[in-house]
Image (cartoon, rainbow, N blue to C red; front, side, top):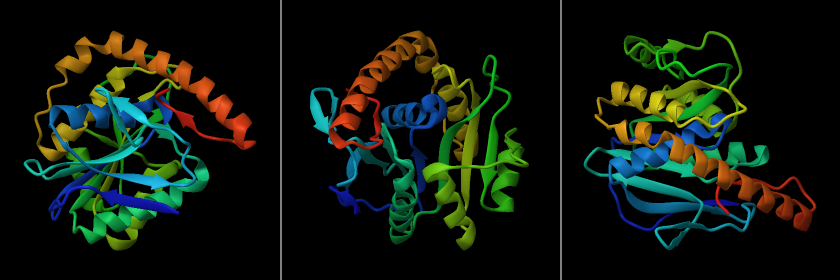
Length: 247
């Protein structure tokens, strides 16, 4: 069972929901966590399930659930992201819970952030999108974002995209080409640049660019530690387990 628990009363009517769950290159969580910080968004809720691993995230000495919801009343933007990779079996029910929250709060549209496998140095001029509506795709193309013509999308964002298309609700998935063998914060920067264009925001990515090497080293170390946690979790459960970004 998956539950979304809001710990603050907020009016999300007409807001944009930004989603960034871990995937190739960790583009989603890197970009969304940076957006949360730069927009000074409020921590308003979390998602829990008995099927989630027994993890707690520590930020600024505060224990927090690893799947959280944030909101900016000023910008009318909600954000949800996770700090561990979701098992495939949970992707659809989790997406359906998030979509139910989206609809019950009468939010306006959805933007998902992810990576797509590629090789070579990331190119800021090449960012792709999939949209649930023709108008959404046209808007993305007007901002220089290229459409995905053929392919397959997976995970939470894919299910959200499908549910939105059924209801003709605007949902745009931003996909940044990444080398699957590395984690490059520049890819998160490219995703944020695209969101700046689509939502007419002015999120400064200078700090992310300047700290790219430091962020990259930190995430690599976290992944190394989390792999040890994952292996231990697999052994204790005798199952496939999940991967935590934070030990």
